[in-house]
Length: 271
Image 1: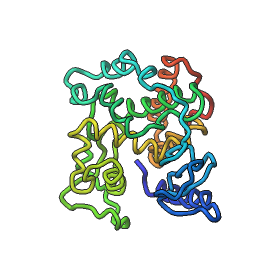
Image 2: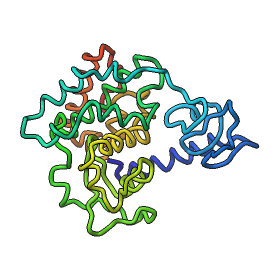
Image 3: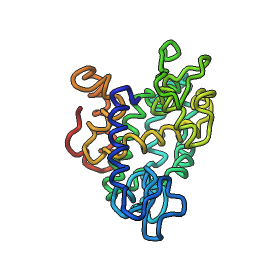
Image 4: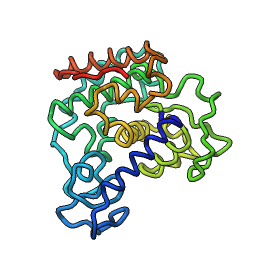
């Protein structure tokens, strides 16, 4: 996830977010106690009242939340319907669980709670479509053959690689690269750079890492259609005709889950 091309896009988004948050006379990075009671602290650490401040990844204040109960949508039947597709020999069968997923959401109160109830259902369908694709319906915890791959970006000096560790895909959304492990660890509370294996050993951290990645890199493009979420997750490798079968598998899963959750998939499904 988040390849070199993606990083450039994320930097541009961060700059745009910072500029959008620059409200004259009321700007203080990281917010702290600087926001008034009517202002939100944006994902970039600035005070304001716009959708960019109070929407996805709002850090504090009157953040937008439609009040949807995720547990009412991700029912045992829905979750286990995915899990039960994995063979009994799959390591994920005894690792992933609905309750752990719901527990992870305690740290992400805006997950699938922006917009209408239909938007929430569509986002949940999208999340589990990607999770199902990347884990083989909760079969896998780690990327197949990942230990042999180099996912160390040495230009990201703020997240120095531990030479004895591998930053290959782990967890429901296959967290990858040193900078993702480093930032996720800092935000959700584990040593991502020196103990990346935690994502494959601790089910709660695994789901938190997946939702963390989703909220920081994917949720913001849900309004552009499912195809935009494919590009946000693995666009450099799959989109623009590179891996059409994988793209179609993600789309098929999404359409299936939308049907199960009683919501239209919308347009722009492919990337």
